[in-house]
Image 1 (cartoon, rainbow, N blue to C red):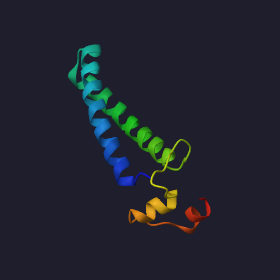
Image 2 (tube, helix red, strand yellow):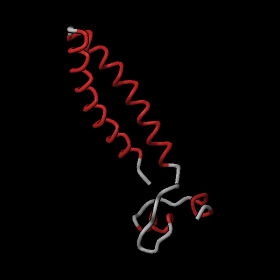
Image 3 (spheres, rainbow, N blue to C red):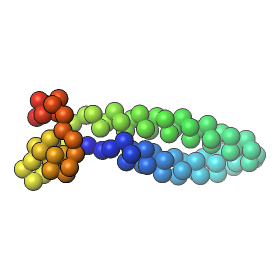
Image 4 (tube, rainbow, N blue to C red):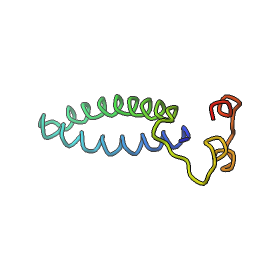
Length: 92
């Protein structure tokens, strides 16, 4: 399972890339650095929130995940030093 911190860092890095590209597109499209930058900031804020929510939703979906080493999902997590809840143990 992906941690919240990892999801946040991924979202921030992706957003920085998007902010740079949208600033360039905004400046080229409008001819104005301030208007293009403002458009990019609005897009970055919306994109950041959307991406973070999207990533966190997918961390709760087990479809398509495979676990190696013969450990169950909770066994792998416990072996990695992670906390395993009673709900997770029941869902194995």
